Image 1 (cartoon, rainbow, N blue to C red):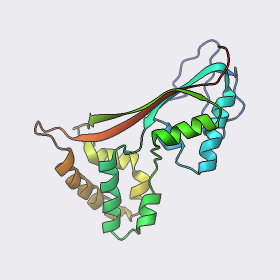
Image 2 (cartoon, rainbow, N blue to C red):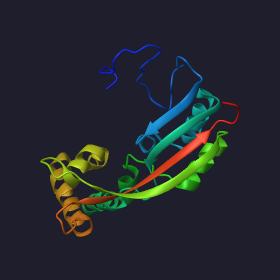
Image 3 (cartoon, rainbow, N blue to C red):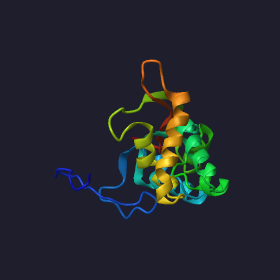
Length: 201
């Protein structure tokens, strides 16, 4: 995606781990924005989570805002639990199954503590249940979602067991996600916040 970005005045494109950003051009900034990324980035240690928000704070000028939306505690809990159950049924021990999850879905309280601990003033923080219809095309739906987003979890199993595990997950979701109109829905829970570095804009 970075290579496809068009050149623009006063604009730089950088691909880097958010947990170890290099010195950035044009810093400090007036805005930082993140969409559907923090629940991947923050699947790390508590110290690195705190360090990420501390770094974000230093990248903003006084009065600057950090605005984000991500998965919250309980996001995709239906699918997440079905994946873990499918791993357990195939002999993966519970700690390994849980530890293979690529996501960290924090609570409002956890995010508030991280933001305020880094020095931010939290102006808004909230969650929303956003039930979302999954695609119905070939390679989509629950199976496509699991193969794409939970690939690391499937890797707990030999590759010749992946299809069976995905089929089990799909069967579980039939009972909780299928609506009478034929659509398959997942329970997304989203968290959004607006946090500001204190000072004059």
